[in-house]
Amino acid sequence: MSNTNTGGPAFPYENRYEHEGMTLRDYFAAKAMQGLLASLPSDTTLYDSNVAKWSYEMADAMLKAKEA
Image (tube, rainbow, N blue to C red; front, side, top):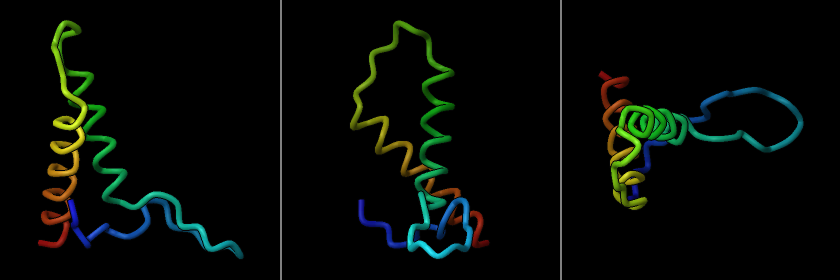
């Protein structure tokens, strides 16, 4: 996935170090993944690559909606 819109830092702060932390896109993807995994029955078989791909697709949709 090569989305260039990261949404910027999820938790922006200013200090003397050049470390911004995770992007808003990563934060949205993590939340989407958390919701997906929490809502599935425990006997569901998941494939890691599909879960990650879906999570970032949801994050991209959230960033697009945020721009509107």
